[in-house]
Length: 327
Image (cartoon, rainbow, N blue to C red; front, side, top):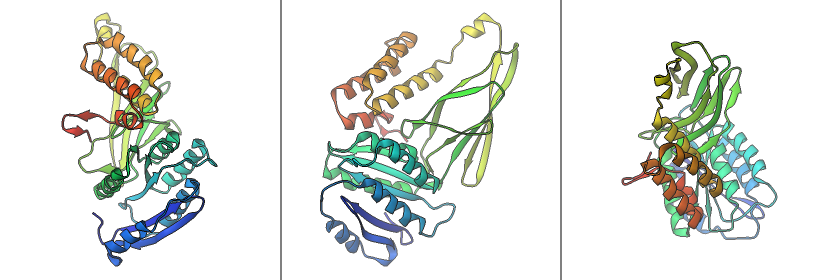
C-alpha cells in the first residue's frame, strides 16, 4: 500500500514516549524491518498519549512536503491519559490540524476514554472509530494508508459569506462521518474546515441558516458559498424567495429537514447521548410520521446503540446501505 516515496514513523507510548522507528522513507527499508519494529513494542504501565501525539506532530513537521502531500497520524490507544482531559486534547488536535495533519483515532477495548478519541478525530478533520479486538488493527491501518493514497485536495474548506442579518448555526459534517463543527468566523464569513478531499468520496455539510424578514421578492441571496481545495475555488450562492402567498409558505422541502434531523440524531448517538437522540427522534416522528423510511432507520439505530456499545455508537455516525458504508 505504501509507495517508495512515502514516509513512515512508529511511536509508542506508555509512561514514556519511545520512537520505535524514526521517520523513514519506505523505499529505503524492508517490510520486515518495519514489522520487526512493531513486534518489539511491549505493553507497559500508563498512557501518556498527549506526549505521544506531540512527538508524532514533530516527526511529521520535519518531513518533505508539498501542497498535495497527505499527512496522517494514525492513533491507536487502549487506555486513558489521566493527565489531560478531552479539552486539552481538543486544543492539541487543533494545533496538529493547523499544520495540515489529520488524525484518524481508534480506541480498542473498553478502557480508553471515548470522548478523547472522538475529539481527536473530529477536531483534526480525520475520523474516530472503535475496534473490538486486536484482529481489527490491521484493517484500521490498512484502510487509512489506502485512503491517504487517494487524496486529491488536502486542507479543504467551505466558506459562507453571509448577508447582513443572516445567521449560521448547527453546523455538521454529515459525510463521510457525522461530526459537529464549530465554524471559524473571518469577518462576515463562516469557514467550515473539511476533511481532505478523496477520489470517489462524497462529503456533505448540513447546517441551519436563519434569514431575516423581508418584503416579498424572488431569489434573494443569503450567502455566497466558496469551496477552497487544492489551490482552486468554486462558488455558488444560496438564495431564498420571500413571499406572502400562504400556499407557497405551506410548501416544505421535506428532504432537507430529514437530512438535518438525521444528522443531529447520528451525531448524538455517536456521542452516546441516547436520551437526546430519542428527543430528536420524537420531534422527527411528529413532523414526518412514523412510517417514513428515515424515521424508521433513525429509530432502529437509536435502539441498536441503546442496547449495544461503542462499536454501535461509531457505526451510527456512518450512512450504511446494502452495499456497505456510503462514501
